[in-house]
Image 1 (spheres, rainbow, N blue to C red):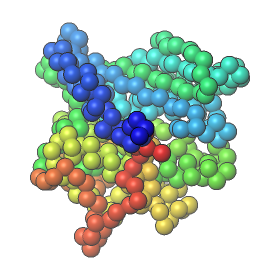
Image 2: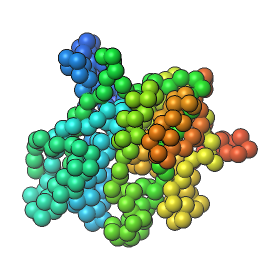
Image 3: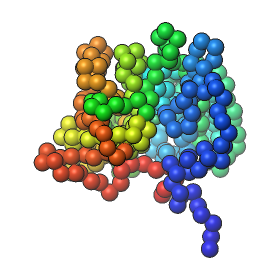
Length: 330
Ligand SMILES: [Mg+2]
């Protein structure tokens, strides 16, 4: 018999397993450890936030289809999304580049051009990193940020922050990143506007910070797919979520290009890098009017087993082949 492989365990079980190996009691400065979008710790009067994410050639991007500048943008934007998902402000990034020796220098220049554009967009300074040789291109960004405080307490959006009766709301629209990936695979060129959601995600950082400031306590970014990401809120908050399929804001590209699967792309496709909030209806509505953002109420949190149910207009549960993205399963 062969040894068990990580693909058999899956990403989330593997994280739990590894957290168990670490085992030691965290230092008292730690506020949020493994299991949220980013870690948070106290440093003097400040609350600092850190996250990291990697894009790998052949896994997260297709070398022929993804221009270097877009790769640079996306590698930082997905980390900004995780800092936004805590309600915090991104500040400093470390960039680790793994490159085959034959990589064109002009490509790396363009990659840093995209990184730099994204850094300017979100007020991030790139302050260091590492370059290593590897059989394929990969790009790891570690991003540090800071949470705002009020009366000495950090204003954070936590996966564990939902309460029964909270409204679930999502920014922007969903499904266009997955639709864009399909179009790229079909040979649509990266310059096509229908691929922008996939290649240049633009996380709603300001709205997320405003949510934390208003007192909304629960948020997550849509990275793995709406259903899976809301399931993380359910698990960490010990609650059920009921979502109305008809309310899910499906993106225009998904609707126009893949009408039969548009709801599936929006619910399970992932990589939209929008924000999901759970909070009292009055706060959600206040956030909408103050921010002017597109913020759609799609369901609510309930007492019950930690699971997400997506219901059609007749009240029947809508199911899809896959709930979302697992980074270790093929
Ligand atoms: Mg996240």
